[in-house]
Amino acid sequence: MKTTYVTTPLYYVNASPHIGHSYTNIAADCYARYRRLRGEQVFFLTGTDEHGQKIAQAALASGKTPQQFADDVVVHFQSLWERLRISHDDFIRTTQPRHEEAVKRIVAAWERAGKLRKSSYQGWYCTPDETFWTDAELAELGRPVCPACQRPLERTQEEGWYLELEAHRGWLAGHVKAHPEFVRPESRRNELMGLLEAPLPEHLCITRPKTRLTWGIEAPFSPDHVIYVWIDALLNYITVPGYPADADRFSGIWPADIHFIGKDILRHHALYWPIMLHALGFTDEQMPRTIFAHGWWRIGEQKMSKSLGNIIDPSAVLTHVLAAQPHAADVYRYFLLREVPFGQDGGFSEDALRVRLNADLGNDLGNLVHRTLSMIERYEGGAIPAGDGLGSEDRALREAVQALPGTLDAAMADVQFSSALEAIMRVISQANQYIESQAPWTLAKQGDSRRLRAVLRTLAETIRAASILLEPFMPGVAAAIRAQLGLGEAPRLLADAAAWPGLADGQRLGPKAVLFPKGTS
Image 1 (cartoon, one colour):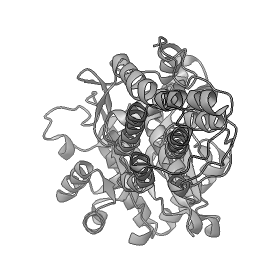
Image 2 (cartoon, rainbow, N blue to C red):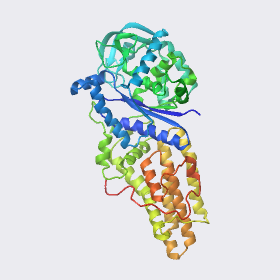
Image 3 (cartoon, helix red, strand yellow):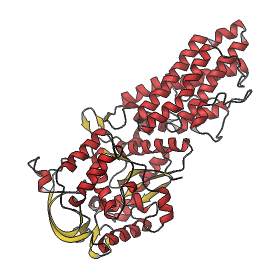
Image 4 (cartoon, rainbow, N blue to C red):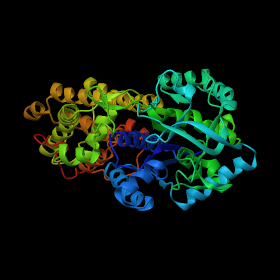
């Protein structure tokens, strides 16, 4: 069976990671964890893009060599991913020899096959985005500013090596039409189709002259050129799985099942990338299956950007805003995945984060776990009761829980994290309402021990199922719930959430702890 292959973009190391980087990686991690929970073999790749003019300029400003600068910054990405519990299987740095050698072999194959031509280029270049633009592409704007980031462009004239672009347009348009899932959401697919309805630039430059930039992978067929940073970076998606050296490993992983990206780099991933693969001889069946371009996070009405100085630092949110939360990383993950439908733009504020923490997590999930386990300790001596003889109210909650794995499957097939979490939290709310309607404290006073045990067992099973269902979204909280139930790290799959019963009669609870302390945000 083919491995499920999940990727993020490679992030530029010209500055430390921000909320946009964390959003993409959290989404990819959640998806990868969910697919593992289904019993699938998963290969989850992330990493850093360390070549190009932006890196060279940032290194110069800091008084370091580009490699020293990249080495210093990359640790911020690696430490943040560890803190956010990102479960990647590989972390690629484009300065690693394994990548550089593979890139040289790939571009050399293009050159040998006659796919490249040497020519002089005149046009416009955006250094922050490392992107070339033609006069035709800027015609509607009426001035030389980058259509992507709105920054001024630099007029460029240089000799380079070029890959055909326009010649592949008809094929790519046909591929997109035949594969509706190729680019998602639909708004981004429509954006790509709009690009493909008009002629593209004739060629895509794949090199930069060393007279302008030396920090890059040297072109194997031209010692005067380095490989253009976007070509270098995009190729990581096939170099890491083993292309072109390890055909057996590559065939077990490729094609990518889903590329998670931000919508600002749609052109590079949905236009340039498939054409690059097509030029290597990849067939329609060998193209990435889905490129999902998510939205931006904004503060108020403004898109976050380094130039505006309004970037949210995830580490600062975890360290300061959520300082007293034992599961700060999971609170942050929950907020980003729950707040907006994936693919749309979202608004970030500390107030909105606190609302999700206090309402969804504290009052609903945390309250359910704390009340249930406290009552099992008080009335059953800290052991899971047998709880036979379920009534209609118990069965209603059980049926809602058992339906959740199917609901989660449907939501995740549509890559809608928010919908999945909404469904889970709806059942959590139902369980809290069940506590109020069944009033275990009253049953205890009345001496109705049989009914009391049925209620407590129903609640304990609900919490056990929730710990499985929440694992892709909040892995730390899920593990903490299992520990409090006395379950530990026993193997589990998504289907186990529907098993009822799933707890052993008389099983002892583990140590209790408040999941989401109040008065700390």
